[in-house]
Length: 264
Image (cartoon, rainbow, N blue to C red):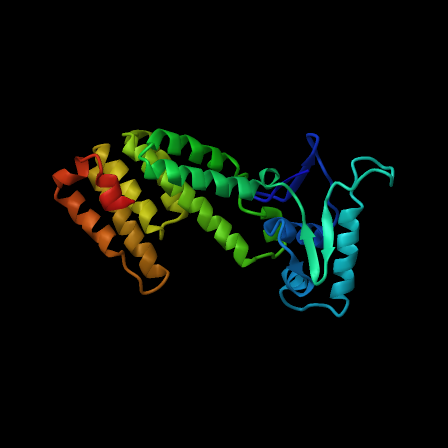
């Protein structure tokens, strides 16, 4: 069984999508996939399922959900082996699954490999790996459950990992001189994440190197406005220094490592 949570929750066996049952069953499975191969306490799992307004029968509902997941089989016969290896631990449950069968663990491994490639200045290799990581995403993490009100801290961590991987890939592409190729993508990304200063700096460098100084300065101003709207924050020192460099057409902006010094 392969599990995907970088988008709506899906489980696939032999190329076929597997029906996972109702909302409680799907939510329990999603949390266990997030913590695959790690014991999850019953209390913690109950809190993940309800967060607030936990019913008196919460533990019984959880037990029923686990039983339902264990009954999922490839065929109709009860003699068929369960598809989901979900085991009971002294204080809860653990989902056993190979790391390469879960998309978010594959994503983490690809990001790790890309970081090693970047440290070696193997920018093409890093870009290729991070594009593979980016392709694992099919929308927001657990988008179907998020619509039902699920909002775990783990999902925020996944979103951050997605943004960081995108930024790392853009760094690699800019180090390869692909500023014109990434401008449009960065425009959409900074519109979606206007307070991400690193992303905005990368957009500024890509625009400047494409001969679009005024637009690069507009990116800085939009970031400054967005940061002010989300709190008392202002662009940091690196962003301000990059703005000054763009205003003055600083020669260092055309140097090969300017991306690493000024934007990354």
